[in-house]
Image (cartoon, rainbow, N blue to C red; front, side, top):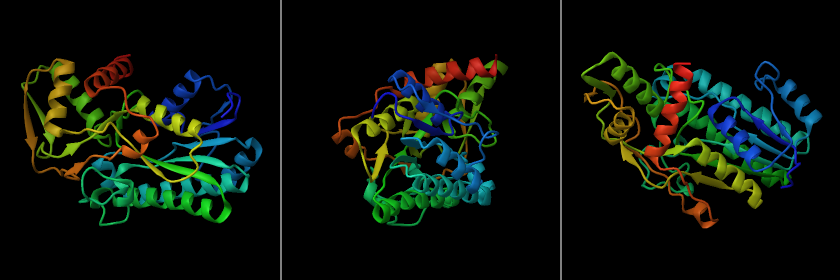
Length: 310
């Protein structure tokens, strides 16, 4: 990919999109195209197609999505399936209509069956039932993967998909009502320390295992795949190791300096028992994550305090 190639990052203000922009700038790309939601409504097929016809980027990163944690996914089920289906259909079909040959669709590891073998390989897709709490979001993301696959087959496009594990980092969502587990823990531990609490209440049993990837590592992997000329397929992107929710909470507490005890609220859902991605396919191409969990949490906490206290 030439450094003056026109690269459109959809969703550039979100955690993933902003990390992609940072990585592209760092790599020397000089022609990055972005639009705010006010400037371009990706839920509008007509507006999206006009934009893509006018700009005709050489490459599209699809990081625009409606996202959230267990509570948000379970509470806004119709919004999650409708909005994600519309955005991806408009962008993928619009890219095809505009003659755009290359595209990267960002999915999610929740596309895989709830109880599939661990670590999770790309070919486990559609081999069993999904986790019920985020099924609408997962189905939308699976549809995006299949859109890419079938535009490649019918029209010889080069649209590939990446499946990140649980992400965290700068520009994350720290709203306790709809955030993911790691940013929620950062905020809860920070506020517990400020109040001088003696304990920290954590949802669920603490036993589920989760894998976490710093978002700048994800962006690095996506740009790596673009530069490798990857033309199709699904690529898991993860750290290659997981921790229990208890271990995660203890690490966050250690980074922030909170010394209270952990209390698990077993009335709240655990979600998927374990979710560790097999990242062998990506490692086979020569890429692996570089930012360890504790270091990443410290960086994320610095971002949280700058935004929360600023």
